[in-house]
Length: 339
Image 1: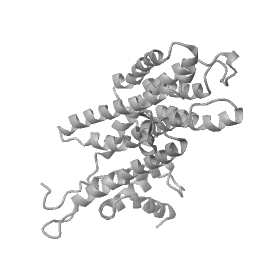
Image 2 (image 1 turned 45 degrees about the vertical axis):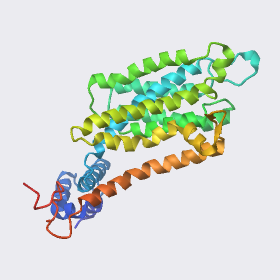
Image 3 (image 1 turned 60 degrees about the horizontal axis):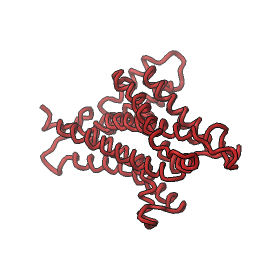
Image 4 (image 1 turned 180 degrees about the vertical axis):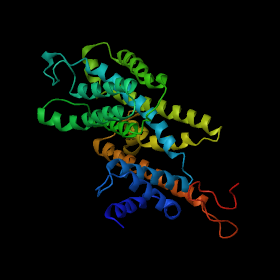
């Protein structure tokens, strides 16, 4: 066995054992036939293809073959939400404090967040023109901007959006990486329509006096109303879609809900932390320690539910102690249930 073949076999461990026994030699042989002369390592594209194929087969064997379509649905909804929020925050950034107040600002904007929101709006434009790889690159740039604004603002001594505004954007952006490569033009254009509507809503949310505009932008009532409102809208949309799909025996909506639980939790951070930290004057006013602890719990609990659900689905599909045959490595059916 050559070194290249051995390395392909190592990558083949991504597949379930039964699938490797049935199809492993055929798969490795195909990749070896296509490999160029003198190659010693699998190409990055081959490695990614094998890992993706292994993940699909493991999900299929666990009865979760509809997880990947569910992730794509969640990615579309997360991208719509992230770009709409960016439009609202962009409007609020356009009203910095007056110079005579002596309050910090980033030139003509409230904070350096204007660069972050511009990157997200750029991603919405790229999504219309070039879905797929270029959109994912635009989302990666927007995510990088969202994370980098914290150290950059500290180094520059300039204000930035608070963490409870940035964290939901990061959660939504990570889910948005699963955007499908092919979507109808009307669906691709939907984020731009959401951006326009959200921008107009942001104008209406602004208080009418200069002091209110500054303090209502991020740190006051505005953000604490917009974020939970976005969480409710996102949750209602995914529940309605999930119910409609479930009526057709399509479980994508359920998986999308599981994937979106973390972004929804981060959007509701003030409310969830307020429940843990007590209520002040009838509204949640949690301290920073409660916000941080809640963010950690949400960030860990949401992703943990996904493998737990997959494990439960797999356990339900396991054959009984008797009367069931071996499972097909390709479709997951037992020999006795196969047509």
